[in-house]
Length: 434
Ligand code: URA
Image (cartoon, rainbow, N blue to C red; front, side, top):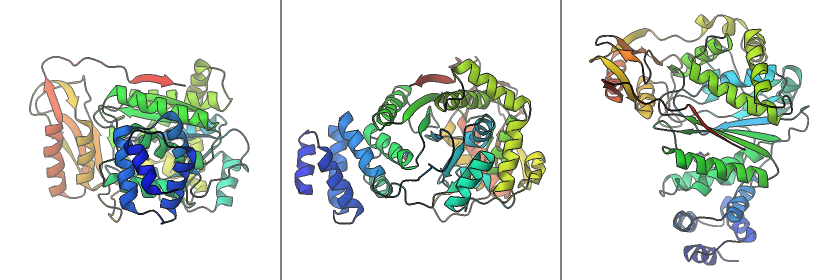
């Protein structure tokens, strides 16, 4: 087999066989096939697209390119969750203890983040002393003992995807539906769960700006999961404005804690209940959505989800008090308002611009080496549809540097559109694809 022939076949619109796809993935991971040939193939795929069979073959080849996490030592049906990412996305911080409190084992590998805020691991490190450096044995013991553990990416999961994603990033070939779906699903399949619930976002703060694209991506990923023998469900939700009110690492942890205390923002709570319901159904703990919702609401009302978060924090090196006394989390020195320059309804908040405000304040990473400031970020005071008077606060900035706060303030004001009439209300949950 020759890489040249594979590139030409795809360039001319042919369908690659499973063997041809394995050949190029194995050759590329092993360093025998150079970047320039794989770049050419990615561009051919970008224009000619891939069939369902090709997409599945690519996913499986990438999932098999490194280690697969063995979760067989964990009792019960393991359900994983994946988010396509957005601004203020603190979902795992509340959802994981909620479903664990309902009896679904949560065994999650998470990452740090590049971008607006850190990833789940950075956010969790807001708890003093918290560590995700667990051995696989500790990880499995913690899940069996308290129902929940999160560790950093130690195993070499789907290395072919890591290499290919980096190459796509610099060759303008990221935004192809089959390549995105296979990239995400290869990592999820290698992470070993029995069922996968996908949190697919759409809107100005999401990867998929258009709802039709989010739906197509969700359908493609659900199809791959099913063909790979894993129960897979996708929930499509709105990311046209930040999720909840808090954007920034420790600020998001506080909002997740508030949610587990029963005082969470409506949109964030709704997302946790929707995703959590699908996880409980997939894990065999509930027969239908209304039963699942009742179970999830009950573990918030009786405090057991919050207690689960406290057990989890303690088991991973922090202390229970950090959960019950959020004032122990990192705090910024400067807290100041962004004042509205007009009266009217908040029509739209350009969501990824809010993410950039958090980045400007120091809450995210621009490069892998950047230091992250866990204490900074923003807390929105007004969201789309709210009325604001001139001089009233649109958001509170949490900063450690006046210059950075000035830059974030300017950017935030430009991201908020104020109008005389209230905007049209769109549904927050757009669809569930199973
Ligand atoms: N996220 C991924 O993991 N892969 C992609 O290709 C795009 C987004």
